Length: 126
Image (cartoon, rainbow, N blue to C red; front, side, top):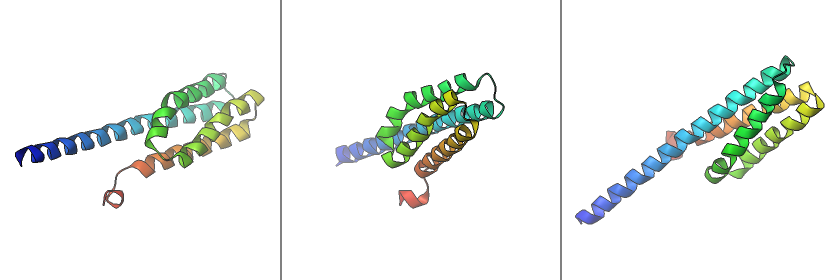
């Protein structure tokens, strides 16, 4: 009896610990992506010389975090985000500022949606 109780407590601690780790990592990923997208959008709006490096940073961050996000989250939201961020490089090469900024806004909306969907609250716990 004691062994079963101890095992149940260990499994609960492992489950909660894993959930907290995943949530913390998700927050770090989405914060980094949000900051990079906002920087890229500001560079595009001012037509700064930092526009290309900012776009490269967004693409690098997405490549770095997408595997973890695809494991953790439903793909439908990530597909939209991947499409939005994938188009940034092409719009930057073409110098199309309005479409670039539109894709940045779409990317920010997708990142915020992903963040809000995975935030624990009473509705999705019980």
